[in-house]
Image (tube, rainbow, N blue to C red):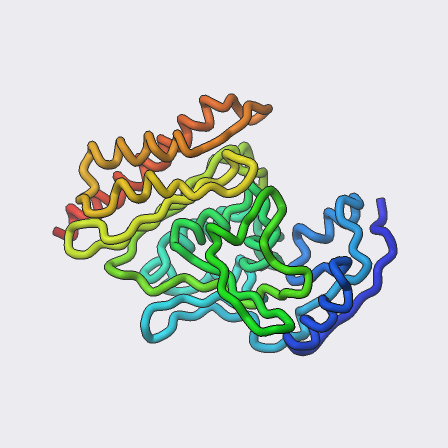
Length: 291
């Protein structure tokens, strides 16, 4: 099947892209990597009147740490850029763990981090990672920019709070309040398949205790899930076996899976609990070794 007819624009600045979005009046779509949008257009699940290709806008293909530890990812940063980044595991372990698990190598070469978050696929990896990290999306519109926490950014399956005239230009991970550790685990039937279930975990330690924690869940609800109660249960503790078991139980309870050809709802809840236990137990061992 071929896409329906559309016009094509290739702006060379953020302001020009925002103006094109405004003129599109809700009928325009942004093209960054195209790994989600173009297949949807070919199947006519999406039929934008205008396609706005932002690949000619300079200086958006970055990922960097500021002096204070804030981490920024530009709108044209590809998955592969993060997958191949030297030293990323030391400063952003959860991102580094997830990068090689996104889709397949072909998609990772072209697909973008920010585009994936904006696509808001309940089985997408990056939104749960950003939730675990307490991250946000910076959106530029006709009246200026605003920062939107990812926990509020995704409003439903394939839905975000972005205005039709706003362009997501950057993802931001706040500076850690302590030593950051974390990871990401995903169950998939084969490479590139949608996630049966995925879990992103990030903790920040002050001394031996947890100063901040975040847990995001992939593929076990109609949208990405912030397992905030599970994360909160870890704060102030030392990642004891009992604390880990409690967090795993709360995360599984926060999930809202449906039974399908990938497994029953109970099975998926079990996977969530298992992954949370495994990730936190690994961090527990790391903490003991450091001590």
